[in-house]
Image (cartoon, rainbow, N blue to C red):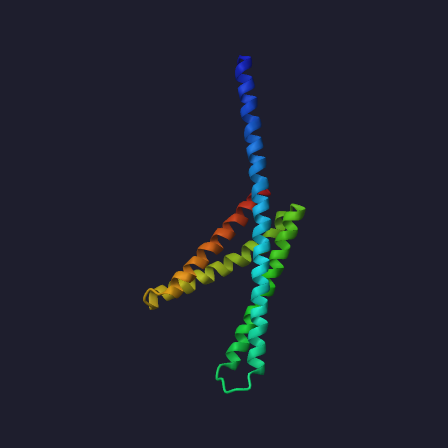
Length: 159
């Protein structure tokens, strides 16, 4: 039979681990909310960039051979930003209502984006010598993976 001192230590240990887990969960939730706000800001920037590219491509009266390319690139930025904003909004709603199913579109969308960026980076490493563009793309991949991993941790925490 355990002594009263052992029981008290066991209860104290259980209480402290529960407190630590609760504190960590609150911290992860706060960070997830901040991360999604930051991503929404970038979505807004990408949407403005897309609209600007389309506007410049349509209103450019001078001779510019890549007008169609600017319009297509602006449309791609706009569509990507809209899908990302939708996924971020769903994830924010999932965090507020504590329903992890709303985080799935975000996780899937950004995993696809991350895979595409890694494939582009691998192509750049294979066909071109090391340059600043590759370093910048590598840093973007690391940041995006860090964000994705954080939201995955949040998804697992909500189970």
